[in-house]
Image 1 (spheres, rainbow, N blue to C red):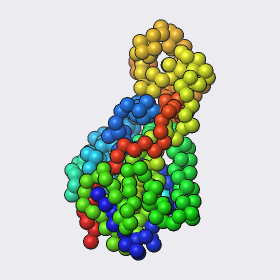
Image 2 (image 1 turned 180 degrees about the vertical axis):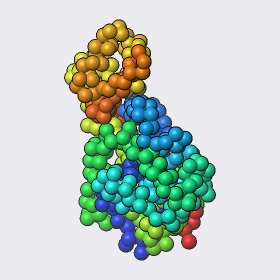
Image 3 (image 1 turned 45 degrees about the horizontal axis):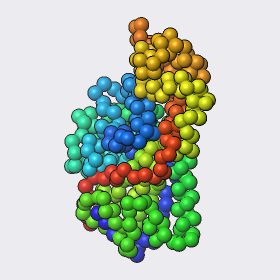
Image 4 (image 1 turned 135 degrees about the vertical axis):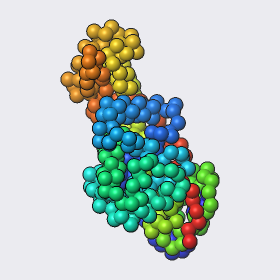
Length: 349
């Protein structure tokens, strides 16, 4: 797949001013659904996110509404709704969700109509084609619920990494111009003027036709311009594949030194969302000892416990997730790519 630039396009290339919390949330939903396992930090993030979602029981979304990862894409080749990957970022997710809720009906119909031509939408989401306010609120609830579990506990580290990349791009621009920036975006992207090549992506060539290109550092995945009607084509290029690569590489032994080996093991198993009996089996501790360690971690604000009848279920708090994830990321390579998320790429114009 190739993105074609004219002289006008090169003059209109720019770097996004700030990372978008909503776009990060959207791409995290894609990575949760399609990311390959095997990376300890990615697996920890996935288990922790899934446990947090189970604990919340998708309370922010009504019955029948799918989690955000099912709404964003049901196959890697499907386009992501433009409204869920804004090219103009606002400082907080709440502000971006409020903007989403105020989207004009004409934009809703155009955006979701384009997505619907490439994949079936959930029944309730079809109402977005008509600008239904209730459906839009359901969407906002799904975004907030997913963000709370998958992104919010790690946003500080993710935001710092994305802003650092933006600073690097500005420096590259000053030293070598726009072509230096395009030549170093990603290991899987090659700049051969006047074309940006993506060898691992199949699809028709994409012509910018004078609209330029916005370069947006992204977490969780890359996203290549897909919608031919997009007035501002935006290339979200992956800077870090998951929150663990934003960490400083704190080795697992440091966590044990801080908490003790038994409590460190308890914290790691609790990331999966477990009952006391299952926690005891997984760690080799007695139920009483496992419960005692959980109590210490809970008083420290690292674990939360809810009861269903006589069974206690334990999960990480955001603080616990922040503490555990860096220990899982030791040795991870920053920016290791797992591929690009992109829908069909019709020729523009």
